[in-house]
Length: 342
Image 1 (tube, helix red, strand yellow):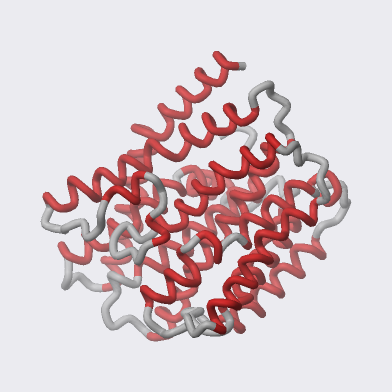
Image 2 (image 1 turned 135 degrees about the vertical axis):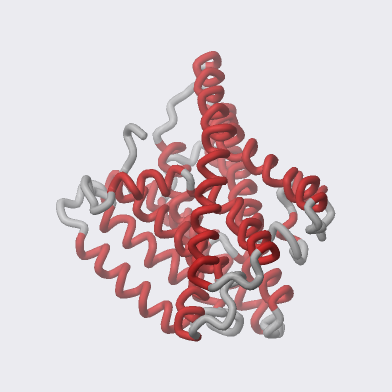
């Protein structure tokens, strides 16, 4: 865990913890309404992930001086994201049905990361991975082939603005009926409606040399926190109607400001803990939904507190195991491959 940024680990940890709280609701029966209401906001963690991904991938690209940047980029992302993803997919397709939980989807779209263009019934959390993988595929081709390192940074905000206008078009077309599959498909799952976070992340990367030189960034962080809470009061936890037009954009802006505000933090409370949570966050995101559903079937009558802690412990245990069995070996292999082509 060398050369890690404590602030980014903190943000990544907060993102995955919010997702865990969201999915834990499937286990909690007759829990207090106020608790379920707070947990319902957990979906915003995915939008924070998008900003972090756009920033880190953008920063990596802007600093890349290799002879084969597209190949280097593809190798890095392939070895980092695909092995564990396909492992979890195989578990959904083969192991889950054997345990008595059928996989209610056609596997083919999941192989090519296009399932977010369909109404998902299973492995639902993979919708955001589709957007990220599509971004990983298109961004290096456009960025490096068109030599966009020195282009006006404002250009990177255009995809996010496009999503705002497209969501507005959907809303005016009546696509805001309060039914989860239709709303999730129209407003959130498909790539065209959710480019805000990635767009702002790349914008932060393109302007890194400017804002990183500021001596004090507290104003940005404070402004981001205020905007974040104002946004939460505006969107409500379900986010199914007119607020959806601006919600992802407002969250992307607030998260971007917070990222700038905390970026220089060298020491934080429970730093080692956040480092480990961030390290296992990818596995936690892939596994936790399945863990929640399996535990809900196995222990339907367990009390809420025990079920919640069992969910957290099991999610971490599975994620840590697959990190050392799958993620870490493939990252070591990635380093060897990159050395050979450098």
